[in-house]
Amino acid sequence: MPPTPHRRATDATAAAASPTEKLTTYRRKRNFTRTAEPAGSGSDEPAGSASGEAASAEPDEHAVAGDGPRRFVVQRHRATRLHYDLRFEIGGVLVSWAVPKGPTLNPDVRHAAFHVEDHPIEYIDFEGVIPAGEYGGGDVIVWDAGTWEPHNAGPDVAAAVAEGELHAELHGEKLRGRFVLVRTGQDAAGKETWLLLHKHDDFAVGGWDPEDHPRSVLSGRTNDEVKAAPDRLWRSDLPAAQASIALRAEPAEATQPADGAQLSDRAQPSDVTQPGGGPSEDELAGLDALPASGVWHIFGRELKVTNLDKVLFPGREDEAPVTKRDFLRYTAQIAPVALPYLADRPLNMNRYPNGAGTKGFWHKELPTHAPNWLPQWENPDADPGESLTYLVVNEPAALVWAANFGALEWHAWTSRTDQPRQPTYALIDIDPGDSTSWEDILVLARLHRTAFEHLRVLALPKVTGQRGIQVWVPIERGPSFDETRQWVEQLSRTVGAVVPELLSWKWEVRARGGKARLDYTQNAINKTLVAPYSARPRPGAPVSMPIGWEELDDPSLRPDGFALRTVPRRLAEKGDLFRPLLDAHQTLPPLG
Image (cartoon, rainbow, N blue to C red; front, side, top):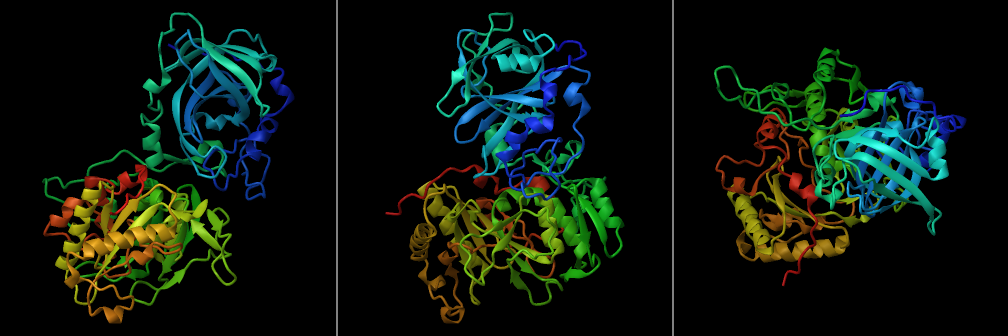
């Protein structure tokens, strides 16, 4: 058990520098408009400063020299290379070492450690994904955490670190007993090299390997699981107490009426507990309480919303129309689920400011009046007259902003902003013609299912919300768009050869004779297909919904059968069927 909390001695040497000063190196290495890591509550920079660091509250008094035991954390971090980050709370910051092989309870081994820059106290529960291309880009879990006591430092722990030897008694969930860090010199890059060892004490375990204990003590998840679906977003521009924003919640079953009857197809989004977290009940109530316009506090942002009672989607059959208030509610509920398919990708917005019954238009350039907090990307390859600055949905509130801006459809690039010419998906678009029946579309989709089974390639389908079916194939970055397009074309022509009477390869719609087309040309930079869970500008607000391959044999399946009001219920029942795409590491095989 952890020891009784004690009055912490002041770190006399550490007091010579404030936590803000100690975090200078940490902040210099990071762009907090791109990474979800905490900037630290001691930041001196104003919000929106050129450095990207955020305004903040005063440093936590407990973190500097308050009552209570010292804390430590070990984070398992998959960046360029896997390593473990060992961090001790000292003098208002987390004094940190990178340990490539990780800490161990085995007293017979000594593991190399590298003294790295101090991290902010708020980092102690950081678990999530640092964007690719940023410093330390990769996934992070809280592998162990607890309290610790110094044993060789007297009143000045920082001085012990400066002198090159720290003895620490750890009281963690995985790590227990006496650990020793000893400085041995410097490496070629100038980093201090240390050794980390465990003493022969009652907690020592011979042969103990940290890789045998891969799960987070915070969430119970592995690095792979956190990478696929981060639980939290760190808002660097908020005070530490407000900065950690939930992105997901535990899955919940759909609420059933008391008599056990099934929910009707007209269940409202609020009638179903949404998997994937989302807004709190208070946030949804805040939206409901607003008049036609006002300020909505959502995901920690203040968002000015307008025309909430405007009809955006006409009703169909006996359903009520969908208002802008309904659409914003849906967007907030679905944003944490859709976020992994949008994050780090430029967003093309199909806007219908006056609703789905009017003519829409593509809007790619982020307007100059957009809030400063919106994540954005400037395309370095944009030609004169082309869109330069794109919205990037790296947090749920950004998608809500887009919905309020009139973007009824969301189309993210298939490449990421750090390597815009390297696609991460290959796309198959089964595009129906005027004479194409739904059964014809299903025949083509089933042929693709057979082809992918034969190739042993992970690919998942979704209905478009209009008339067709699309198939998404996750790929490791490497092939160019030209190479990906050629692969998809070869696959599509092989599939199409089985049923040539259903297809036309003509580019012009009028030249196709009403037949379907397998449109491989969408595999190009800045060419997009509608994102999973995006609404479509049609009566009833149908949604582009991931489906299971087996659902192609369900006679009730329809391409526009999933609507805004029923999607949360389906997610509660089936979960996110596209989730396996996020953890796939595959290359496209040769096609004979």
